[in-house]
Image (cartoon, rainbow, N blue to C red; front, side, top):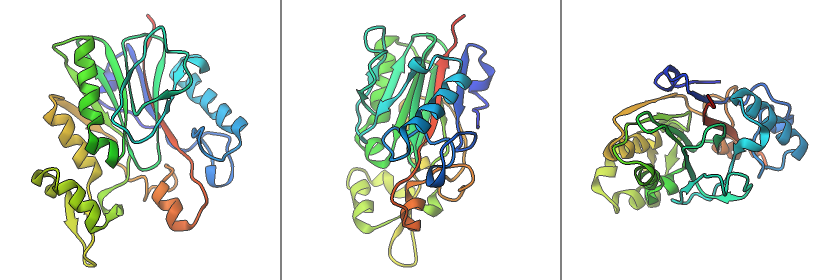
Amino acid sequence: MFYSKKLSQFRNLSHCFFSKKNGVSEGIYKSLNCGIGSNDKKENVKKNLFLVSKKMGVEKSDLILMHQTHSNKVIVVDEKNKKNEKLVTDALVTDLKGIALAVLTADCVPIILYDKKNNIIGCIHAGWKGALSGVIENTIKKFKELKKDNQIIASVGPCIGKESYEVGEEFYQTFVSKSDFNNKFFAKTKNDKFFFDLRGFVISILSENGVLEIDGIDLDTFEESDNFFSYRRSQKLGELDYGRCISSISLIKS
């Protein structure tokens, strides 16, 4: 389990970037696989989610998961939809206490946010598609729609590292055609491919959108096989599926 130094100072918050340890799943899903969409045994995933909810200090039914589609969609969780188990979105925002927002990742970037002035929390699933199409900007907008004059802290969780994320020319062109500024997140390799700095790209967007306090857990999910699931590593090993790690944040009921 990993924690943000900035967010850990707030006693009204509970948060965690969970590793893949301390769960019940077996095989390629060992052990804290929280991916409902994986082919793991459903009872094991449910047990893992129960362990996560217990650690977060909420009921299992109050651990709010997303059906993630690499979109730029954001949903505000309120009293009306908090029991909806099929929130199709890639970011969540709420000011409700006693529920935990959660994001699942296996190389993509989990981002958790806290507006310390207005007591609003959020989480983002930021893969390259979602980040490029505006999921981070849209999440910040939702914070502002709930309350203006925000003081948002963002913590960027473990994700695939630059040296592990080799991409082709077409991928590179997708980014630089949108903005020349994006060139700075790529480094050319010897075989005419590129290393892509997804973490750096995400942090840059947060900064550009007024998030002044940013920290993170700068660990590479591809390299850290003991700690994290990785889609790209599973592909390289020829595995048929992969587990998902979970990251979560909650406003504690007083």
